[in-house]
Image (cartoon, rainbow, N blue to C red; front, side, top):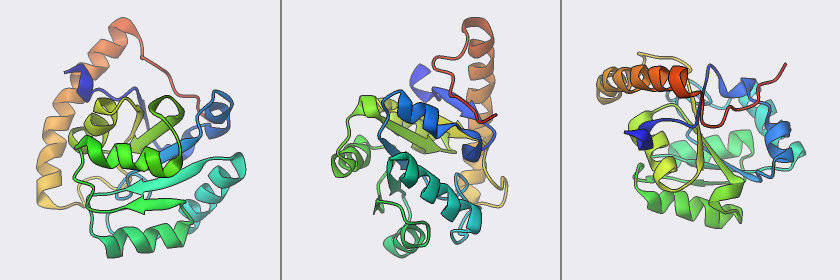
Length: 178
């Protein structure tokens, strides 16, 4: 079950201190799109565009890894200025994560993954040896029916994760902006 637990769990990806993570040696960030950065199906908004500009100025290479089709992922990549994208990634399969690192020129020890779903995003990142950061969904319950059903199962995993975290502490607390 541990492979389902995120290495860190945050309210919003925008709260993370990525400058601190860069100083720790991380150089690439792989992102899920929908409900990690913007609501499901939304365009890149001002906040997301400024966020990717901040990451670029910090020195990060960024890649979008999504199970969506190319039109959705490519247009979002162009809107926010990410380094690259992979569509129809078949997450949680490891192949998309491995290809993402290859394109970023990073390894598992220098790559972060940020997503909002346990059974696709987090499980795939953990299986690929990438430090996973899970964020609460940007807009929960305004999703496709199959995702809403998965949210109930995720709640059980997060309950166990919360108990584990309370007993043993978080594996790798992620630095937050002050």
